[in-house]
Length: 247
Ligand code: 13P
Image: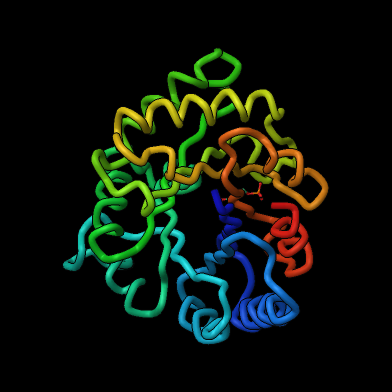
């Protein structure tokens, strides 16, 4: 399966930083693109700017979130059709930072994934256990609950991405061991068979959590690891590129 390397810029940088990063990536892409799909998810105010800068390149642009309704009285929120309208093709939903900061539930995350699909976007549905849950040996139970609750059932497999991001590995420099990643990704694949049915093997399962140029190759070579969702290391064009080249 062709890997997807996605950069989640989170709430970092101003317009000039977003433009410089997008231009840096575009320049690297002109020298030849790695054999994977590439995606960047900038902060909302700079989505249009980045989409324009990357127009004509093969680097896709996505939102970091969308609302679970297609329009209406939701002050401060962003609708999936708006993201599609400005050139996005993907949207991250249910990131652990949104689950924690905004109390998003699995049902809300599923609604977001459904409106994203209806708007023609590919949702990247994030799941992952906290350190406390991991220490209590609850990892697989938490993942099962989140996948069953957040992934819309019976969806077109080619248009769905799931990201496993252990919360304790995000921004900490600690990554799950390859053995942990293999175990959790196999469990997600097994759950997807029941949820998605035929074609479930086509759903890309990304790993996220302190992916860096020096650990990417090992993580990306594990079974059922179909790409990476990169935070900190995606804020530097060269390091994001180095990760993409290891895919
Ligand atoms: P870091 O790569 O900074 O750990 O962030 C991972 C992440 O949360 C991507 O969505």
